[in-house]
Length: 454
Image 1 (spheres, one colour):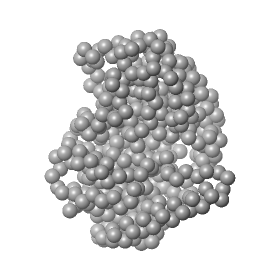
Image 2: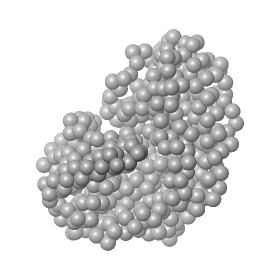
Image 3: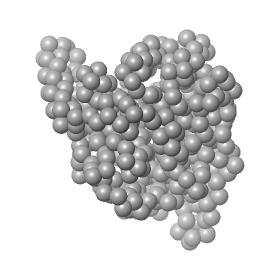
Image 4: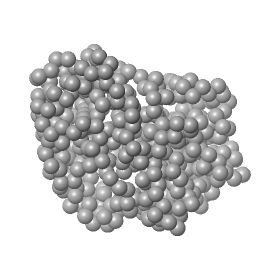
């Protein structure tokens, strides 16, 4: 069977989608892991045979609905798990109504849920389609389990001292795009139409996040000044402007602003995680790391579920005491933080006997048909990708030459892939899962991976 897995954000999604690809390929399927345009252009030119197209959301924007319809008309099945997750708040109904619609679920063959809460909510709201909504869990959460602890290398930029990881989630006020550009994007994608209150929430979030950023800067300076036991790694959200943090934290001893690589590497090798309203608090909890929720003022729209995890701290003085206490407990081996709370297990389905990735693949296999076994000409597709890259490069250079504005050559969400790096990830996953089947891994372009049996 042909499986095409869409990756939007490499840092967030690539590892889990390589896990999916390895497990599917070891069962005899041919899998492409790629950015969106490489897949859709390949389909449009009939270079890619029909199969499963697995995407990162079913948000009901006009462009996405049209794109998925073209895939369906070309003989493809569309499946999805929402990579945003909707994990940081209590309840899922509001998130579901913004991120899905009758039309997008009707177009899909299967919708996968992270856990009980989102699956039940989707089945209730879209009851007509409940048979195609599956509680599988997320492959991203698979990789948070202790089983994959050794998959996550020590980051090359890791400080020499033990470190506190601060996970920032200020993606509105400190976004790489300006606030008005971000709001324009939400408007054009129909978010404000589906939730009329959201535009006012965004305006309040700008104020809340500005104040929160100021409080975190003050707290980081205080922790640095009053501690020489450990370092601090500030990890901006992938959508955030890293340089903004570097400006505010420049010259502060023992503080490192690092956005590079998956956050899981940093979580696994930290002694604790500090956050406000961040999904990383859930990941850290599953990974057995102490979590501190810093809430220095009453927020108008807090991400309450995430903030209720771990220790709740409201002042920088108490923050210092709590972190120092956790640090000493981790150094003496007296900290026991392995139990996962029931409220997390309601959000995220963790099956000890089977990976979420395996569950998803079994659903795909249940929708297989003879057309999905047709073979694509991978050499022609690889040549096409080279032509496409050259054309895009020429176009970008022309735009930069004739325009007063500067255009980015690279998508911030999709950094170029390298064969050495991808093969290393595949080798490690195979070793952890004890997969002995020989797999053929090819980099068709710096944004497209082919994985299949040899």
